[in-house]
Length: 295
Image 1: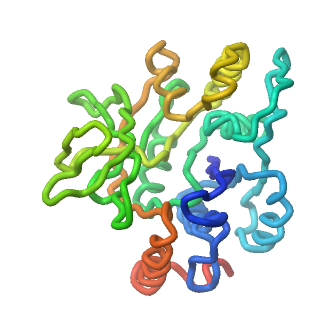
Image 2: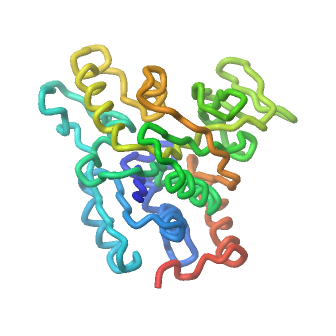
């Protein structure tokens, strides 16, 4: 099983590359705790998607840390990485989006894989659930979304964007509705962009997905269409949740919402940093993380 971590962001709200901030008790990156939890639950291949200029740094940082038998790949997300039948000769600074980031790993992944953000902490139980899902699912079209409780994913330092899950009675995925400015207001959570109110008990996507290799072929086809649309090239990106939702809509994927039953925290704002440091320190003392994390 493979864990793919997306670490190609630029950290505009955080102020620096938060993926490589030394938040752990011994200077570990936040992503290392996800790697550790994944390996503890049977994942034996780690892939990190990052910017080209970070590849050597990350390889050097992780050298000798992962257990023997765990494969480690670092892949860059490049604007020039296009389908064979496509070309792009314009100017663009932003990357092509999170779905393209995952597609960038198509040549190093050949089985089911989990996808997460490198700058989020997802919790031990989430990796237990993801591992069990992969091991118990025999359907090559079955994807999964790890669902987190909305009220447990907010920041004290500003509004957050979250994808609120819509499910049927059997917890099968219907859609993820993006809400862009969610913040706690008394006993409710409000999206100040739309004035919609939520109880806080809703399950939301924190971008922890379990995918199948069929994802790569679908993204490639979608990317070819995307590159023929001049307006989309200028202003849009290929987003991972939207692509999976589209696969579901055209019966290319079944999607199960699996409760993560885990705490989550991230480092969206610079003010979130101390909370993350304190949480990792506490979990090292109470939840069995070793220090240093790797032998």
